[in-house]
Image (cartoon, rainbow, N blue to C red; front, side, top):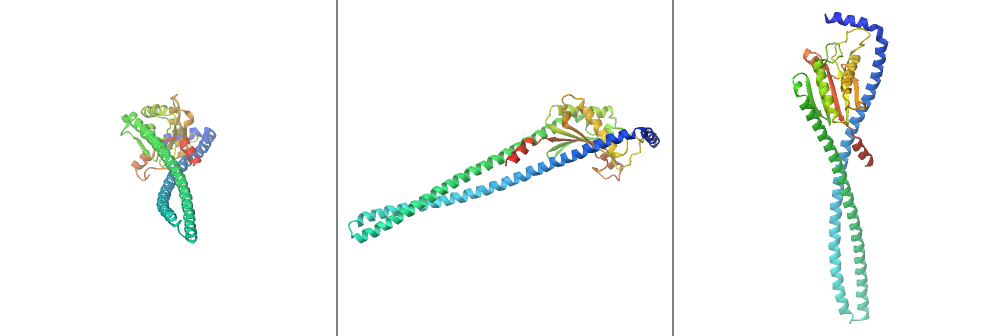
Length: 320
């Protein structure tokens, strides 16, 4: 019965195939841009992790240099104290030897001058080491502050995303067990809704129950205006056999379904439309194998991917 209806829809849609292809091409272009932006976000996330690791390495190196310089400074201080003691001893000897012959006096005066020169050299070396130690201490503090600042920002982003995830889970609790899940991973929050909650087979019209869930998601997003929202449509690998002209293939169907979700979210005036992106991924990003009915049911879904904006972290990385 479904196949007969689908064949009829294909025949009806032939007359509007050009319009559908144009829409598809525009959405395909937007999806390509989206993939680039998503890749850019992932690269940025990887860059943040690499930069943090490098900062940790630099921090460890500065700390080792600091400890080494401190040890050298302490050694110089000991040498200086020993030289100072020798000087005082020689000065005492000098006083005693003043009564001796001119030759002995000259010899002791030469030794004194030599010791004084050595003492002056050690004082200069100690001053240079102190200056180097102060610089290393300043660099170490600067590196520590930068690491702490970056970790603090990343922790704040992670905490904000957890808070968002908790808010979504609480708001969507009534849909637990109905094909809706909320997860947090890789610094993002994923709201996944199976098609059984949203669409009839071959349709991109959202049903009443599914619309309630999407509206609740929009209410939470309205309170979090600094979140980028990617809505992805997914299908199983069954070839689309609906009305010709309305839907060309699974990519087209998944894109229309993603756009339908965007339209519902846009009805909430608090949701920034420039944060929303719709993308159709067809059957090319399955969660499970399409070899079983259960796997196909899991693959037919809408995923709402919520990503924090990383402009502040990106600026910090550029300043490093």
